[in-house]
Length: 361
Ligand code: CP3
Image (tube, protein in one colour):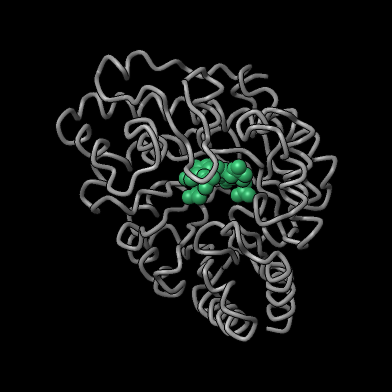
């Protein structure tokens, strides 16, 4: 693989609703996919994963292909998202970590000092070759459906590394950031390199779009986000833009105050959680960077709404679609990942409803 080879989306998919909407065009219907659609809400996922630890599963190409394709077959979503995890490239690079069911990623030696940062191993593209192989299988398995690759953004991944696991307050991460900015920026630089290597492998294998998850960025003030995170995220998106013209999506949870700044990170589509209506999000994105033209928004049905009965689901889906129309270009999604106890039948009905409603509109 040459790292500098330009790659682009499969030509025959450029008219697919996801890729049209992501470029700000008018699709046949509003595209819909769900973050965490490939996972525990599906019995066929639990059956396929049985006996294989999460991170090992992410490095078995046939299994990754099967699990990634399951929600496309079952729900008829307009995109597949690669079955992987934001900590996979760290694990593949040899950092001691595990995904503990019910807890999340746990790191055996948290990164807390300049020496810890200096000792972090770099990712060799060979170490994630099975991910590229899985994507190759997927392109054949899903000739009509865009495949979205992804990586974690450096702040969110840094939080796992520094805290040693999931954290509510990110206190060790922020302590490092404030007390030793030099080590902080060195850590972020290393993570940018790792994530770019991981994404390069995915782009070279042919993913049709990429999403960068900065799930925990909403824990930061706008000022701190701009100083400690944004320049690094910008380096990732600039690196991707050099390699490929596939759409780039950026998403954070609780990031309503950061939307304007996130707009400047370099993505084509900005994912929004359920706290900010999509039309309001679009205004924030537009006023932050009027020269960039109208934004494309992705989101933002509250995943908890899926538990409230069909009448409520229907009303809320229609509301999100209305706000998406007011926003301009819209990719329908949840405001965060599918919760494990979600009834998969409800997800299928949401896909049908989004398609039917947006065709009529
Ligand atoms: O369907 C998809 O979206 C594709 C697969 C995907 C997974 N993780 C699979 C997974 C994606 C895109 C992710 C990203 C991810 N992983 C994020 C960013 C998105 C977000 O949710 O904010 C984060 C923060 C992680 C870290 C992580 N990995 C957590 C918090 C957990 C849940 C831990 C638990 O058991 O509750 C994981 C594990 C994980 N990643 C699972 C899946 C399907 C569950 C593993 C299992 O089935 O045992």
